[in-house]
Length: 251
Image (tube, rainbow, N blue to C red; front, side, top):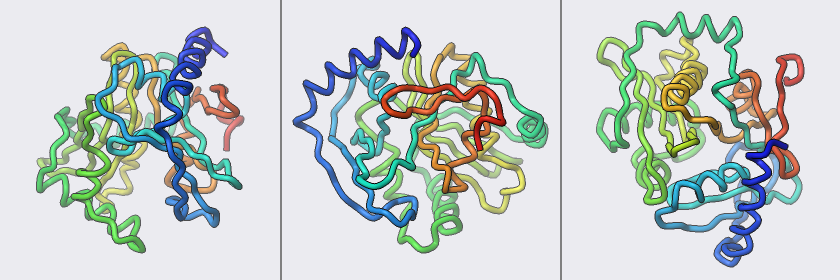
């Protein structure tokens, strides 16, 4: 464990002792459609200091709206937090091809915006990828993306004026949290999910951000396991970040 992670672990233990009474467990159907019950351990928060959010992320927590949560599923450990350290990342051959393929995209940085363009593309994405659920893009923005906890932004990808992808991210002094990414299903051949992560890495380097949190790696779910193709990466297992430095070490 690095000195940074040791310090975060010490501060996390202090935080947990102070805030444990605010957290509750909520059992629901698994949001990733695994045949097991999911249990969210979560609490509502108001605005948080930058360092507090950093410690939560370093302890494997995620954000959903004004909630911070981690998973307490009784019979499953499939959701594994994953992060990158942009300064050590090296793209592989396929990722370099994705960069080249998407050189024609315009990249725009903006505040979070519940605009007609954003909602329309997000709804198209949800209808294509999750047709079995009654997902509503406006509700995603109002209840998931927008928040009062931390500062966030959107990174939008345009092709000849048409929005083809949008990343929702939280940003701190030394960390970036990838909250969600949606894209035009008609442009799937561009590998926009991969291009988005490559863009986040580049943005972190430009902002001198040391840690990029990518959410959960779930080996059984294709839309979640591609994150482990970025090396080196780190998985939060048994309360510690464990490095995976070579491609053959991770499926």
